[in-house]
Image 1 (spheres, each protein chain N blue to C red):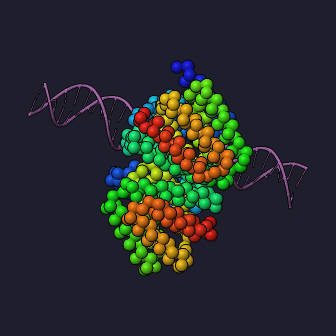
Image 2 (image 1 turned 90 degrees about the vertical axis):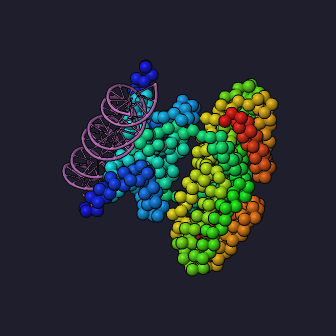
Image 3 (image 1 turned 60 degrees about the vertical axis):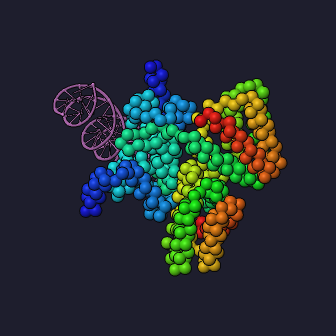
Amino acid sequence: MASEVIEQAGRRTVTAISRQSLHGEIVSRLRDMIIEGDLQPGQRIYENQLGEELGVSRTPLREALKFLASEGLVELVPSRGAVVKRFSAKDVEDMLIVIRSMEMLAARLACAKASDEAIARLRVLHDAMVRHYQAGERLEYYKLNQQIHTGIVALADNAPLTEVHGLLQSRVKRIRFIGHEGAERWASAVAEHERIIAALEARDAETLARELDIHLENGWERVKSVV
Amino acid sequence: MASEVIEQAGRRTVTAISRQSLHGEIVSRLRDMIIEGDLQPGQRIYENQLGEELGVSRTPLREALKFLASEGLVELVPSRGAVVKRFSAKDVEDMLIVIRSMEMLAARLACAKASDEAIARLRVLHDAMVRHYQAGERLEYYKLNQQIHTGIVALADNAPLTEVHGLLQSRVKRIRFIGHEGAERWASAVAEHERIIAALEARDAETLARELDIHLENGWERVKSVV
DNA sequence: ATTTTTTATACTGTATACAAAATGCTTGCA
DNA sequence: TGCAAGCATTTTGTATACAGTATAAAAAAT
């Protein structure tokens, strides 16, 4: 395969230039592969094979797998290596409960601490998202949607909260990504977002938390059928 | 060194017997060493040296370090290896905010889902804790205290919540461990716990959440001075 | 024909060796 | 005496080799 040769040549160059280590590079790459479904849940990971594909030897690959295991994206089975973690419906439901709670916490903190400029930046994202909705561009909509939720968490200026939220978010991403909602649900989701941004701009913590609660509860219903 | 030989011989035996992999063994060991202050914040970890101490080669040790890096207990500096992570006062404060929120969530879930037997088991732990308080046994008290908080989270029957709570808990552990509170504060902490268990037994979610909120807010004040 | 045992193969776990990078020290020079 | 440059040493990063274990297939026995 031509791409593999390019990959190998690229690696050396990238390693030299980029600030990221090879380890970090592999971690990001594998994380994306898992989230985007390139590596499917339950699939066993053969170190030799995957290492060859990525153009790296087993050592840094194994280190990356350990890292991802701690993130909960792969499972380490003793003497049988790594397997892409598979989540049950309950697992996903449980994650969404926690994510919802964390976003509500973030919302309250954000109302108290966020700067006007930071909130304005979220409004810009929101408006862009609405335009993608009106244009029917689901993928672009989805990406901005994610960014807004992550953005609200970021407003709370609480690193552990951001980290843990991102951790769980990355696990449900590959499931949410599949979820294509119907037109009327999509419309109401956008309306919910509008109210969320408005509450944030008003710095009305309780309204914001309540709206997020409703929104994520609905989102959960939207996803539920897929899992 | 004689101990090294014993260590190495011991390792082979242990590896054969224990269900845990050597990797898992090292992870647990290092985690304890960090939490208990054996490895101090900011301290650089020399792989050769530490590997020799533990009687393992660099490969599994490095894999364990990557795992702990993902847990947030060590930091990986490119080309300069691993350093025990140091947390600022704000970091700790932020963690405690998140932990508090998660315990409150757990409390609400627990009131709805926990079995009577599970709650009864917590009551037993609580009573034992009170006895240790009365005997003035701080360490034993502290351990049961931890167990009770972890136990409440466990009652929620939400694996991701348990995992994430444990993650943050392990980071603040080494700080809390140092925190020795005064007699009157200790007394009020015990009283708060009594109310918490009572609310749990009554399955009064809102009271339980409120009491936990107060308790953890106070606990934060208790710790604050130390950091 | 089915089940059990043996054997071969493939993969993981661990150690070691080598290469590249960083740090610290020494020596030379101003 | 102070500074800088180069060299030596230490340490990390990566590859490879070897050992142990699980899996699968084939052969033998019931």
